[in-house]
Image (cartoon, rainbow, N blue to C red; front, side, top):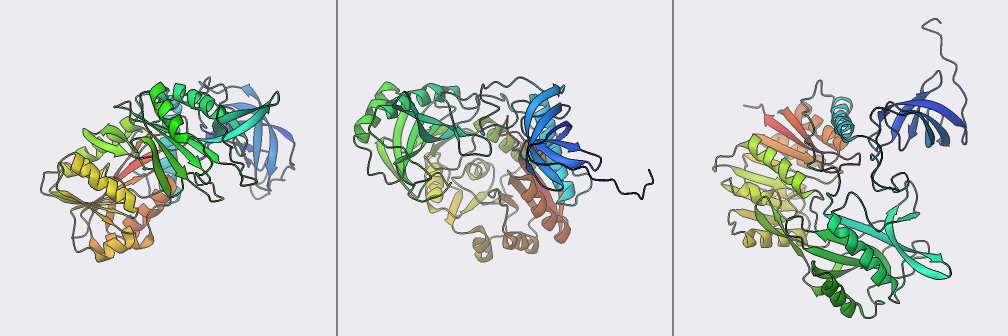
Length: 468
């Protein structure tokens, strides 16, 4: 065929069965294949590069489609048997079908592709992914939507995760990726809720009371915090007595809390949380520090991996005790406080006032006096900041940094920046501005696997200012 001759597109339609080889993984964890002479893209969950599969097209556009796996015709060498019996249904994990070595390789490739395609970096200095000590049993927090089913005329309380691309609840009594100490507590509390005359929330009608059950565990302390999320918090008769009973039955439960979320939203927690019994937080040991973790505190779900990435950051910075460090998006101080132990001083900026209060309390708990915390948006705080730090640590939410934050850093010419990110796409976008519009050079990128069995990857990017 002449190179100028266009390839005749092959028709496809919803419900059609096709055979396709899988060659890649998407950023959301789906297998990616190409079908037909014009090589249109097909996304198929539960597949692994190297698979040859049969799929049913469920959603079709002219240039791409989403399919449902029908049969693995030829399995990939990277395919493995999932640990979970509902791995093909539950939306909590995407990659249990892939070997752990391949997951790490795919995550590194995900970061490289984002930096090349979005950040416009040529041969970005991305290192090997920091492997998890264990790819299972690692999550220190699990939050389950609650529902119910009618079985033989009786209401059965359910807790689990939503099926992929749906709001159909997959009922669980245990989960292979959460800390195994939470499994018996999950099963116990489901039975306890079952026995109460408490209504379960219905998101269609916006009626009913109980919405979520959240469990947190201190990986080092073993303390467990249980939190119920309710629509109003007013229709849970006897909850105080029940909470005390739960703590007596499971002494590792140090506190039971109630959060109220009356909004029609996918957001789990509302703004009001009260202690029902015990204490409103658990203690955890992190990087040698004692910290308090509350029900809606942001704290990395893989404690050991967060410590490992922190250690990589400290080794790279090699602080000598004379540096001033600014920690933007500082949260409860989990990065600020360990760094303060080896720096001259640290300043944390955080928009959430309750997180700042927790950070101050955590500093007091550990006798750290050279760390301060301020409430406010990072963008506005930087404008008002008179301090010229030696190092800036950025750890923004998934959406990345505001444009004003990046512009301020470019104008200030901070000598060194460490950018910690859970979203390779927004990381690449922000690094492009800092390095191509600003005076910074990308020295290295260290990915870390904080979320085994999922497509998510954490990164620490290290930048140096080249301006004189």
